[in-house]
Length: 201
Length: 221
Image (cartoon, rainbow over all chains, first blue to last red; front, side):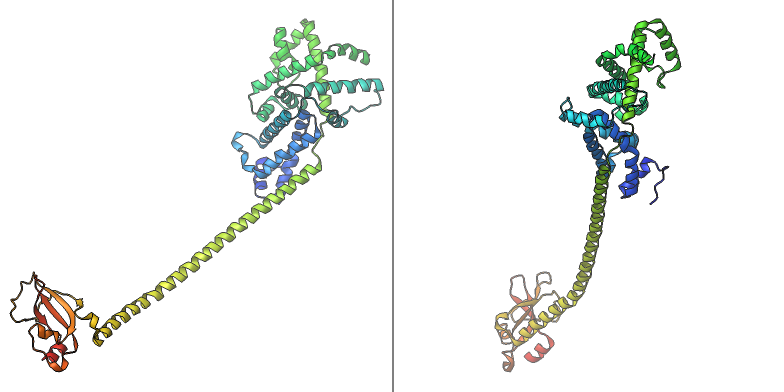
């Protein structure tokens, strides 16, 4: 059966529920990336993120009727399921990540050493990224998910509200609080403008 | 705009989520307030770091083994569903076939049963008649038929004709000799024969009149 890019998620889900494997695969490819990144940024572990993505799509395979089109899009539904799994994972997992897990997630995401960058500057940038990553992962989950969706995934407030099933006002206030917490955690950044200016000069 | 308002809305400077009027007010406040200018600058650096962090994992995806596992599960589930559907269809087909066979055999049995019952009934009637004609002693005086047709009865000696509403006709089998006890004349050559007799019994339970079948009456004569 032919799958077109114009087919909506709803159409794909209906076909998938009837046993159309291509429709299911298309649905998976459309959403897995964003869900994986969301889970990765929330948990800090690519292994946990994969498990969560797998669980989310297993729900779609086993219980496609759980999705109610009148309550939102499939994307929002999948985010909702992913969020529940992430919260369960965070409840089970100690707040401090193990060195191995941090390393695992960190290996993929070290800043690239560019030609114009000195090793010292690269090390500084890498250190700051790690601090930012740690600061994000230490945010309380409700602020973290908002920061992840709005600042890292660059979702609009409406999209984030739909994914997190809450009003836009809640997203605004959580984001404000999340940003304030991040700034407070990264107090060292207060001196950075001078350093950054010095580097530019 | 106050510093507090700036800390809430001013950090969204340049964001699509913030409206134009608010952004102008925030820019104006930024020029006047050095504290908020530092805050804004810090936020811009942090935002760059967040974007850098996002860019590093922008192409991160689940590994192909996740898709493989999901597709395996998908195939298993839909194979099971197909098998279940086939099972259900087969089950219903078998049930329908069984019901059809049951209905046909039931009808057939019923159609064969009716004549055989009729045959059994007629056979039993014949057997009773044969027994009666062969003269089973135990059946002497047995009531076979009763009707209130009181015509052609001959009054027994010393009997008064009973009122029709008090009389009952009793159909009995008896030996011809027994008619003698009722005061009737009996041909002694056929005294041992079994005959059918209708007795008109009064409300006191005693026979008042008797009616003989044609053959029997001829014989008794």
